[in-house]
Image 1 (tube, one colour):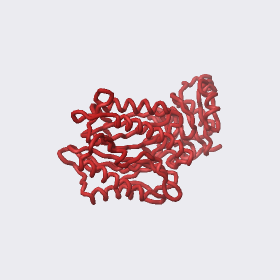
Image 2 (tube, rainbow, N blue to C red):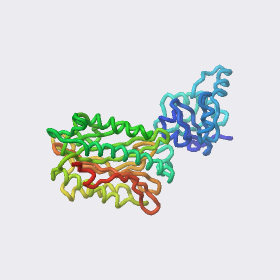
Image 3 (cartoon, rainbow, N blue to C red):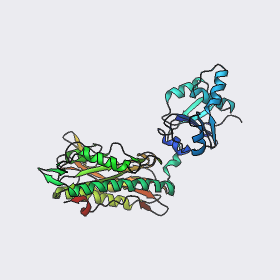
Image 4 (spheres, rainbow, N blue to C red):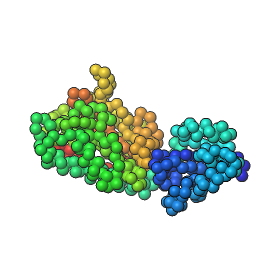
Length: 381
């Protein structure tokens, strides 16, 4: 066959659950690592006897090979049975020496292959750049997860409507409502829809000033409570991502103005979303809006305040993937799924963030997020 160029032979050794790239190419989920080799677009996987029948039924691989055959060859030749030596034996038969691997390919595997005489090149960018462009079917999978997220948060809205306010805190069912309790309810609601959510954020008051603070303790009344929910589907593995800021009880003017500023910035950024638009322009629109409204960003008393994160990111088989929507970015293209999530955070006041997901189409975008952002929904009496 002759030696192949590095960019023609790709190798992944990982589990389907741990590697979004591997799952993207094979659609085969496993808890344990298996070998994937791609030669001139032919997809080849090596699996053990436990998984081989399922792999033949479920995977999109062109060839499903039993590791048993290669283990026997190695044993008969007195070589150690290992993933590295199985790959080496196969590629030696194919007369291949150059291999392209993902940027985060395990060093132990790379060292072993180099020791066996192979040239290993790590990808400097996405291993499968086409992953960033979602088909309409993939967008439907993401939207399906989003529907579950919205239904789960809808249950929290119902609880907040039935809650009371005592001594500045929210009470439900005769006891103070905590961040932990709300996250537990959200998790229960989502798992009933086969959605697995980790690190869900329910952060109220001062805690909302740290964008990735997950939240703990009693939830305050009258202050903004940030809900950032980003599960993936247990079967399809696709994520969704939504943030809403809710209030229980009368809202002070300072918080109302903060919320209105974030909503205005989000609307302006969303209005720019279309194919061939630079994603950084969406971010700049947010920055410009906040500055025009008098909201400054910077360090004060040792803490950051204002708007100090990117405007968004891609969503798919990972919660954060291409493309970026920030100070640097790239041209938006049909198939991109991006978030638009501006926020303002001021210690002593609180934090507000609002996040939608957009699917870029040939002519503009489709908003995959339908949960309301109006005051009638977010300010719960």
